Length: 128
Image 1 (cartoon, rainbow, N blue to C red):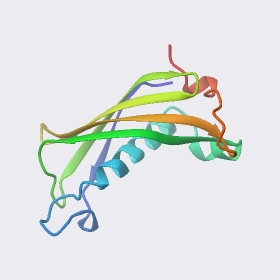
Image 2 (image 1 turned 90 degrees about the vertical axis):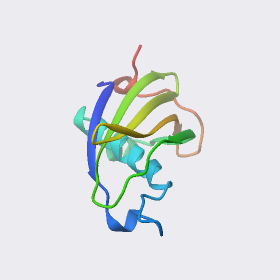
Image 3 (image 1 turned 180 degrees about the vertical axis):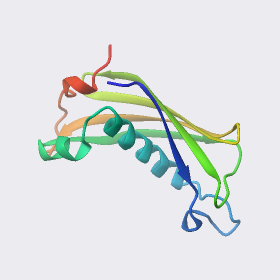
């Protein structure tokens, strides 16, 4: 399992608000995109995990904003897995643009089955 990854995303017009800045809710989407791509880069498919009956759901999310992002900015979404054991995975994020930290965040994911019961993480997702 890789524990650090960086994904680039260009801000699309529809992600901006009336002030021509990225709407704050889109940062959660950027985090999701980085998590999914990190898993894919490590050679695993979230889709296949779901087909096997395991789901990763967001139990907690925190986002702190420092500077705005604008339409057409190229953002680097840096993700780092800090804990992954039992039924939980914790990630930390930084959103960078042109060397400036725009936002940082944290998510705590829970591994559950389709009935909503906690399940141990698959071996390939665990870190010690």
